[in-house]
Amino acid sequence: MCVTDISATKNGPLDPRLNWATLSQAERDAAYDNNAAVKNSAALIAERNQMSEALRASRKSFLDMPYGDREKTKIDLYPAADKTAPCLVFLHGGYWQRNSRELFAMLVEGVAAHGWSVAIPGYSLAPDTSLTEIVTEISRSLDWLTQNGASYGISGPVVLSGWSAGAHLVAMALDHPRVTAGLAISGVYDLAPIRDTGLNNALKLTDQEIARLSPLRLPAVHKRLDIAYGTAELPALVFDSIKLHEARVAAHAPGKLFPIEGADHFSILSELRRPDGALVEIARKLVG
Image (cartoon, rainbow, N blue to C red; front, side):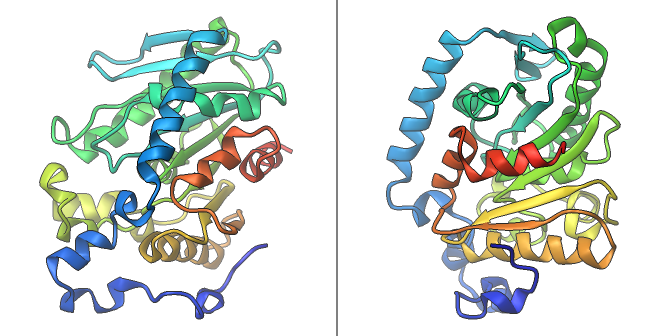
């Protein structure tokens, strides 16, 4: 199923940002509160973390490789048997202020079952650093992979993927020379409303950052970017995904929109973890 028109969601909830100025602080916060919106989010997160710990301990890998000089600027590499195999570079979510690369290792097994390599960079978090610096760190991690990946068995084409805040970072780093194509999952692509929520207590977004770091406010990068979201996600995230796809279509930039039927913000990751998952299939098609 592929939706290419915002009107196709007219039977669903309206975008809360249409009446943003009239909403209370609690309503604005709720518009982006994925944990509260998914009743079993705590159980899904605990399961994800447990599976990631087990995979990280059991699979051949090069862990905690520093690509920068900060505590979190490290990358985990899971090379395939074939060094020329495609590599999924995955960027974690957490509204740029939570989580770490270790908690998403379970996603390796999805594409690895098809002979792919996987790399998972970490990055510094707000409030210890700005979103501007986080975006820069992602580019640095890709620079490091360009320079050093082959010596660790990773030299194939890179599909840059990410979830939630990581999807925003995918859109920001799509133009990196090492990136062949992107897969953005359940992302936020306009930062302006975020500044009006409690999330901004840590982010402290400036006018300049909103203008320069909102994919919906920037010219389209003309590399393939597939955009996925769960149909059971918060409307703000659904509409950001649809609007970014629409903007890219208008700019003749390549890529498809994939609504994952029934998936919420957390369950959608199972489609990237399972070898037969919908997002695994989408990623594989990005390199032909």
